[in-house]
Length: 296
Picture 1 (cartoon, rainbow, N blue to C red):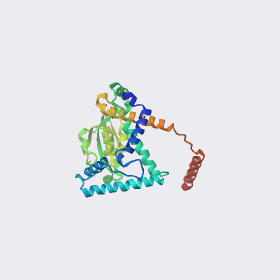
Picture 2 (tube, rainbow, N blue to C red; picture 1 turned 120 degrees about the vertical axis):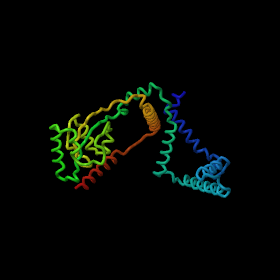
Picture 3 (cartoon, rainbow, N blue to C red; picture 1 turned 90 degrees about the vertical axis):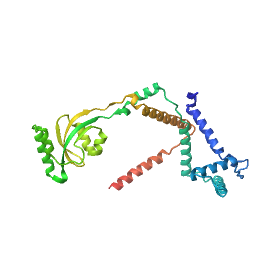
Picture 4 (cartoon, rainbow, N blue to C red; picture 1 turned 30 degrees about the vertical axis):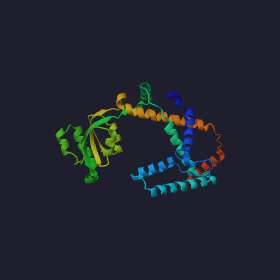
């Protein structure tokens, strides 16, 4: 039964039924045999009262309820007169709003149901690149302030790099460079965290560095750095159980999107669409010529 309800054509018929229902309800009391009669029934009054209660956190007084009814009657009169005058036709905003409402209805009816374990496993395997655990890196750095040292910063960094390559003792590192307001040692840092602290170019350079060797100077948003990568863990596939809820959300979203696309395809097949390709081509040529003219 659930499989039948997922068929796009059946869903389209359901959408039509819902649209008809929305037209008739909840204000069905106002529609009568004569389009010139507006009847405000008990159901309609209760909805107006409920809307007021939700907005104001209290029920309306008799006078306020009368005002709500009068406002609704005015809206209904103006709406019917606008339809009679054809004001809904050739109006981009109205078209867009109606199309949007139908799209919302399609989304509401696009219930893909709950996926089975087999479906989730297949989706996880097919889209495994979405669920990679990002690589992490541990490193230590020596900071050289370009604001403090000016043009000397790069040469000072190179001099200390040479000392480190020559086997300078570890305790001498504390005497190198300048004070850094953040950490000197980073353990298992994620790429996005490194980028947030040091900037994109620094994070990109860090990926290229070999381990257990001093490199630099590397530029960051603060200045220059000598860097030693102690450990790097490459990205890996996440375990299915660890990302199961995310996989389920992605599966449901994919199914809803496919149902919407299939539904629209069925609707699209009912229409013959004729596009003036010559006009399109002329507009493209005119736009290109205009861009070139502005560039001169």
